[in-house]
Structures are given as C-alpha cells and as structure tokens.
Length: 117
Image 1 (cartoon, rainbow, N blue to C red):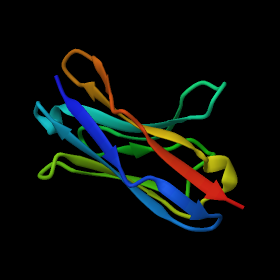
Image 2: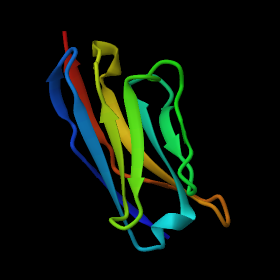
Image 3: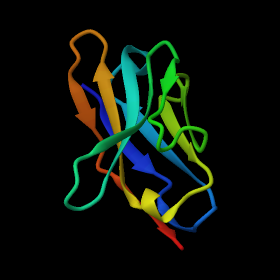
Image 4: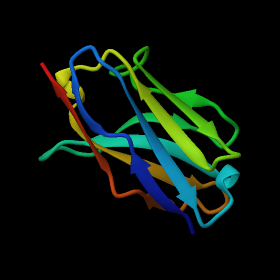
C-alpha cells in the first residue's frame, strides 16, 4: 500500500509554469509506475503524463512538449513540470501509482491548477 500527497497547485497566468509534486510513503516507491491525471467537472479523468518504474515517460499529444514528468526514487517523489500553460489546462490534478507486482491503483487527493487568460 502507498499513500500519495500532491502539492504545488495554484493560480497562474496563461503562458506561465507550475511544478507539481507528489510525495509517496508506505511502500517501496521504485516498485510503482507513476502518473499524473487531471479532471474537470463533468468530464472523465484523463492521463497527462506517466513514468514507468524504469523511468520511461509518456504523454498525450495535448501536453507533449509542454509537460515533463520526472521521478526521484531517492526522495519517493514524482514531479510534473508544466510550462506554457493554457486556460484549458485548468483542472484538479491527481497523482496515481500502480504497483508493478499486482497492478493495484492508488490515488492522491488532488491539487487544483487554475490558468487564467
């Protein structure tokens, strides 16, 4: 089992940057694939970045070139660097962990990101 706590959300102007952090505890961090999702009211939660336990990152086209996911296994933390933010990036951002041994999902509580135009 793992507990996830996100931080770093806030209000930023369009074109600006934010860095989200997700601190994990309770298990061996390197045994988890990690991801960031976002959700707006009335819409499904969508994946915006993922990084495997081995460090391979992937992004949907909507954020490719603007968002960068990274992980620091020594600090049990995954980051999401968000640059060139757009108003449509406004959402609650959630950290996700998937255990590589049983594929069980874990979620953080979410952090609000608001991009003003």
